[in-house]
Image 1: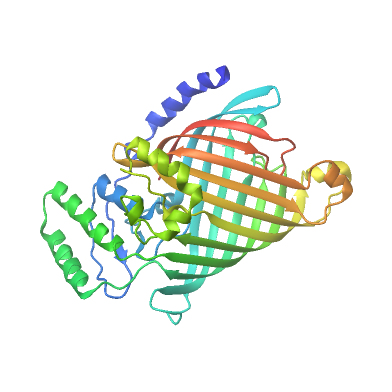
Image 2 (image 1 turned 90 degrees about the horizontal axis):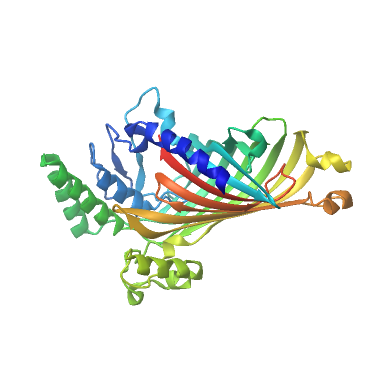
Length: 406
């Protein structure tokens, strides 16, 4: 643990050297697009952080963005692409056996939609279906590569067909009138604090129109998996299916008797509901239907290019692989009026029909668990355990860091 201390000073210098615009972005031109029938489209200029934080909290960064809030529309610039980067400075200490090594580094997650095509609203009033093409890149980089405990980078092209049912319902006549009056009021407000509060009220009204949402996706992936030096790499061609269910109904319940049946069935959130009650985030024990895990499964063909660890036991052929992933996220407390989240992710990679030599060397299966506590931007702490493809042994990693969205 002593090794990590000397890196903390360096990390703090990096944190405080981040420009304010990066650590706490103030978009020059932000719009809220409400796309359901019966909604008009107000332009909301320069909301303060409290309004943006409420929007973020309303969505709670789900794996599937709700159809009601389409996107932030930030004024175009040469640096527009940076808006899609999730960047984390890290100081981590990895433990494997009796060895313990510390490292300074960073992780990145980038996702960009290349194209999207709607297949029409024929599946229902609260249904959307379409085709997407996306590019994404994720990875962990250590400034000293030899002590990188999560040396696994993925660069991917994804072609998906999706369908979403629910998520939003049409406003009632009274809600439409109220909505129109609120939009008109926004156009006349000059005081920033009053304006900011009005934006939050508008978003609360919008959230009241949300219904339970189920999102399904079938996709084809072309991926390049590698270590950070690219001395080990492999192509993966995979078919993938994912499902995400969000229990928006009664998501603002303040006590057990007001919660939905779906929320009560979410046993995974029970420990965190207790924590929320103890920290004052909620006044009573209230599990959340919004915190149901997202599940993804895939079957693919792996084509090793360089550095395949299976080669050490005499097998460097292409091989089929099954992998599954589950992600979970839920709030536990507030910090300066911003929610602190616990997020967890579990991944497993299993070679199908592995040879006896590969099995005996324990190179046919990789499993990896990670958990993080922190706000959507700012300091965080995390813990990981397991190994990813290319790694020969499991690591336990404790991480202190700072994350920002450019």
